[in-house]
Amino acid sequence: MALYAAYGSNLDPHQMLQRAPHSPPAGTGWLVGWRLTFGGADQGWEGALATVVEDPDAQVFVMLYDVPPMDERELDFWEGAELALYRKLRVRVQTLDGTALAWLYVLDDYEGGLPSARYLGILADAAEMAGAPADYVADLRARPCRSVGP
Image (spheres, rainbow, N blue to C red):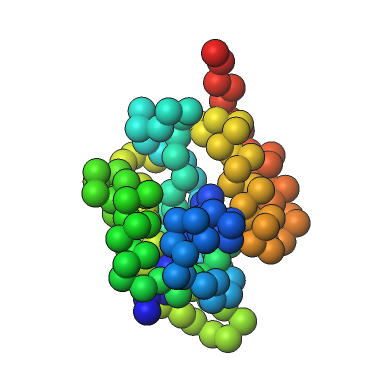
């Protein structure tokens, strides 16, 4: 099985159970030298979408999952990989047990734009459910966002 590093809404173990039911959690860790950001504002219904970019002064909390090929295909569907919205990238994740090699999805678009308040709340709730430190979750909740009107 391949390790998948979730940093967005897939941090939520309940969501992952629905999307990839054969993929158990395999721990948490940090993408050191990366930062969580948003991009592709014209791709999402409610604004910019989560992604990660390299940044030597930052780190991103991740949940690792053991993903078999059949669940990987399902995740590709959910993440828009078939539509070239996101692409896969292999990264090194720092865990309490050392370094693990995993793959994740990165937005195949330019950085910039604001996520909706609802989307940002989903990401913060997912990080909290995954056991992210309180200051990491608080930082997510404090990020600038855009309001989506009717």
